Length: 110
Length: 120
Image 1 (cartoon, each protein chain N blue to C red):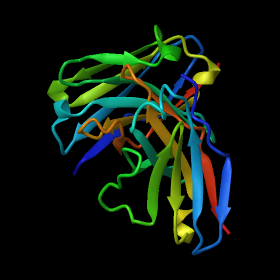
Image 2 (cartoon, chains in turn purple, orange):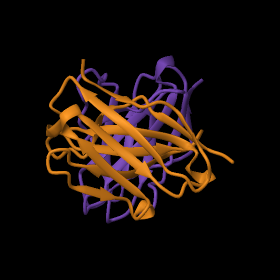
Image 3 (cartoon, each protein chain N blue to C red):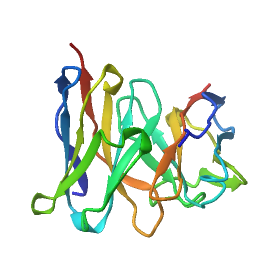
Image 4 (cartoon, rainbow over the protein chains, first blue to last red):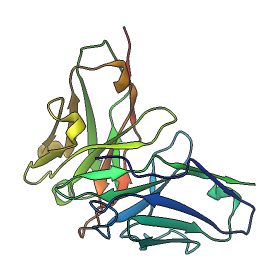
């Protein structure tokens, strides 16, 4: 179970859109529509932002959207705001009751 | 209030074991699987294993097989993660997380985290 691959950092100016990628394999991201995304502020627990590739939990702004193509999933944050600055992690179901996370991407709002 | 509350920070010697608890409240404990995820300071998240609190069924990441045991006590809505043969690499924050129902394979509720420090 290798970790999913995310870029270590991403950035954008307020109002812009930023997309973070999450690359796995045909055994995890490519095989299941079970990719989720989490936001983590310093010193805090992760918070679910997207599940099942593109579904938003109640209370998550529609500025956050997800998609998937083949073995790569993506999180797009539109209309960047200062409070979006955080670490973002992807996760995928990997079959046989196992899960795998990405290494995380630090999003900076310039 | 729907929440997961974990036990406090621990300091352990190399070779020792640690048991972290995760108490659920505000929802039916046996209705949702619970997972354990860990995070080294400044590093990414790592999935360790899960338990179905209703059946007791467990599944662990291959990396932790033989070293981790997850149990539960339904009478007090609490899950436990026991990690043995600790090394300095186990100096991380351990989180419990509830699996969102409906086969979403996502984690919609997290504990506050428990810092475990392994030091001689």
